[in-house]
Length: 79
Image (tube, rainbow, N blue to C red):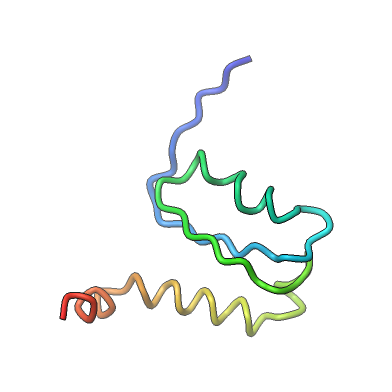
């Protein structure tokens, strides 16, 4: 069985919890790589439920990631 997989042409952030017993770090970091052309992976402390246990941590990383993509960040980088 051959499945044609299309590369996702968008910027993608993966927050990979270090202590996830269900989806290990390798799965979190390696599985998306063949499907995404612009992948950022950040390893974070926490387990499978880190999103509910540490919403502050998730929000911080998402906010920083999005801020780095904004036109204002691009202008700052050119200075």
